[in-house]
Amino acid sequence: MSRPLTATIDLSALRHNYQLAKRLHGGRALAIVKANAYGHGAVRCAQALGDIADGFGVAAIEEAIQLREAGIRQPILLLEGWFESSELALIDQHDLWTALHSLEQIDAIEAASFDKPLHIWLKVDSGMHRLGIHPDDFETAYRRLMASGKVGKIVAMTHFSRADELGCDTTAEQIARFQAAIAGLALETSLSNSGGVLGWPGARGDWARPGIMLYGGAALDRQLPDWPKPVMQLDSRLIAVRELPCGEAIGYGAHFVTSAPVTRVGVVACGYADGYPRVVPTGTPVLIDGRRSRILGRVSMDMIVVDLSGFDDAGVGSAVRLWGEGLTADEIASAAGTIAYELFCNVKRARLVYTD
Ligand SMILES: *Cc1c(COP(=O)(O)O)cnc(C)c1O
Image (cartoon, rainbow, N blue to C red):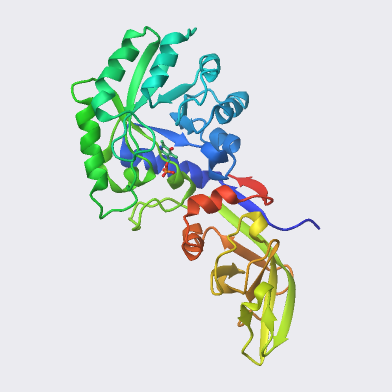
């Protein structure tokens, strides 16, 4: 018997979520599949979206080339652009689209030669203050690129810092700064990540860039009626069952001590080496045969102990769901003080299985 930890990826839910993003936003959408599709498997996810996606977004050229080598022919955008100018030849060769976020990168384009016209997403820093050209420099950057003779198309893009916070003014301010930067230029635009798609009708552009919502993670601080479905089910099984008397400590650091005359507990094959967060406390929910129970004591590297009080039918081999349908990754993420993005990206060692 092999270790039972499995991440089952529901590709029809992924397709549903992509179509939801397109329907809410209108226009076209790049499915963001960076970081191995947030841990869901970039090639399989891109293939599953192959006939419906308008294109894909990745963080690095290696990720783009992996998709090209797997036969993905749609547009692929490098969301952070290139890191060294030697990548420009590969961008040309693999027919990639690239973000451009600094004036120095325009110098590099002017100095290079290309077989095909470049497709540039010119990034404006509208307030995130990570990557992007100052709004005042946007028009100059645009004119220099057009004058270089090397660029076929320019899309204006920006990225939100607080689109997940529905009550916050920052997104509206960023939209206004972006619109002012591109005023008078007839350009296609792209503003919205998942939070923008779900929560900000004023942030529509020609292209959406949904990431986390494709995978069913919360992109807003409030759930709305149109909401993505979970895609990853992280499942394992009980590998041992114990009955402990009162006053016995469980796991590293003795963080949980039994108080009932008899406490029945189960041991689950999943731990922090699989990407389950170590920091969650006793009481964090888990599903056993589809019903909610709780973890007891510290998460260890390969195992978690769970409460089987009231689960008389559960035994070795019983199904345990760490997150997925019925128990969202967001709930576990908030117990860990983080976001589902990080949990998904951290999943490792689990067998990845795909269902249609
Ligand atoms: C990662 C990323 C996205 C997707 O963000 P989500 O919050 O996951 O939807 C969109 N745009 C850019 C530039 C990104 O880096």
